[in-house]
Length: 86
Image (tube, rainbow, N blue to C red):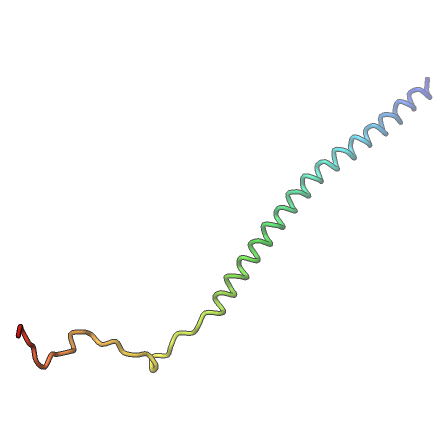
């Protein structure tokens, strides 16, 4: 009787171990998938931010005030002679 009880205990331990390994691997696989998708998302964000920084760094500098051409208002021009008809 004692050997039969020990056999059932060992069988329960082995079956429990196998089920525990299976459940643990399934949970870690789902967690691995989530982490992998998060890594892909963060890589996409990193590349997007790099592009933005590159665009901002390559912008031309504004022209200095001394080199800017002054725009004249049309009101400053006066006609010397105004001809109406022939």
